[in-house]
Image 1 (cartoon, one colour):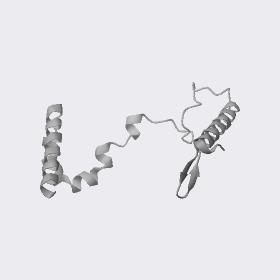
Image 2: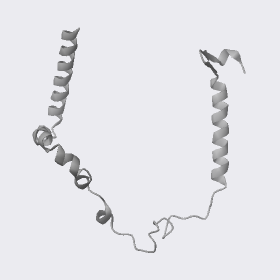
Image 3: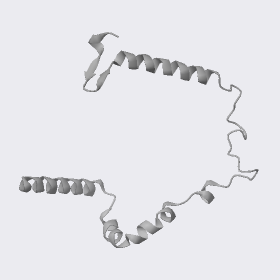
Image 4: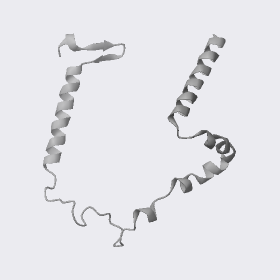
Length: 115
């Protein structure tokens, strides 16, 4: 390949032109595979529905695992921590910015003292 476009490193070299050619070849292969796909597939009807061994699909809220149930053990183990942390989350953006600025000021102070 052209040496002017090559980047030599301590363990070898790479050429961006070669990578662009490889990317173009991969893209062409993907297009060929995509073009040979099934054209008569339609999402309407039952074609896109999940197969549940012939059973009807239940409603989403009946099968969805709620976050409270999923992380119950985690939140129960750290309930003492959450008891103090939850009241700090007010939902007001000004409070979050104040916490961010206070934390950054503390970090800068610690770095200045340690240095």
